[in-house]
Image (cartoon, rainbow over all chains, first blue to last red; front, top):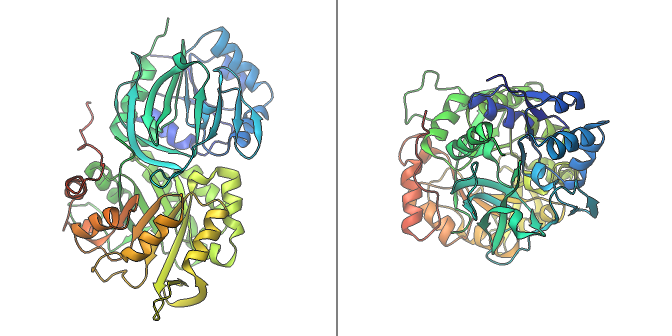
Length: 205
Length: 261
């Protein structure tokens, strides 16, 4: 279809897995650490695993990358998908080994999940994705989660899907052309590959 | 529902080849880890574990290649253990496509390696792997290394506490008394680990039938149950294991649906 899909390479551990999964659903993403490629992209995917600050710093260390993302996603409104920490980075702040600044695109804070005798942390394994509103990319199903921190959105209308682990946790956030998922579509077998397919066909207006 | 109890088949890999692997399906190359991983992916396993038992340090890179090739065709969670001694070892596996790395002997001699990995990549990707034997006098369990042959004098609960404090996000608990016996998990050991720590526990060592898997989750309280031979030899399928857990009241994944073309 000739679309340019930019998969941002900023040292995130799951880059290759996301690349593999996008290719498996027929995309030919450009793995890039070049802000110019981001400015020319028709669709952008931001992967991410690891500590919040380490990921933010990795992104910020690429000269011009955050500015390019802001231009292309927030001004030009191309479809954007953040995965795991790639979604968490959209928050204002992350509280993990100290308090750190995020991109601030979606109001909220990323903080630790509280354990209890029945609730093990990290939240690790397959759990429900329950959409709370209609969204072209999201359907209900079971996906693989692997995280000790979660996105508490300031405005509930930004929460697109939840999962249950000691209460409702944000499984996906969405606003306009932006979607972010806490789970790992690249590791969620058919559910995850289908989600990536829908993202690739998504034309938010 | 809540997070599902995970069923994890474990494949031993030496020099890039599977040792005692799957024979429940016809494989073109019975020693190819990728083909075996695909069989478990298709069967609906919740995670897959590769344990690298390569003896020589020089041949370690073979596991990286195995992980890369597996991650190209299997879109399921993958844990890799065996021979991980540093944050750089962990990084290479994670970049290749592993989601979690399990650290065993290196963390016995140097628990700081757990903190190094957790600090760089997050606790969610670091599994503290524990090989323990019950003490003869009934006073708990002791950590063993070298495949269960070498005693360390370290108490298993103390060691687990050290691993978790350093940032291990999961404990893979193997009873070396039970490993290979097919008489079931050491449920007291699993239960003690589950009750004492906030992180998920994987029960390992001793599975001989489906009831043992159920016991690990229900009596032991494990978040995940690991087994090898009963799956590899086709004595039980992943679907049967899910059904047995569901019948015992555990939350499990829905039966897999093949993906629309």
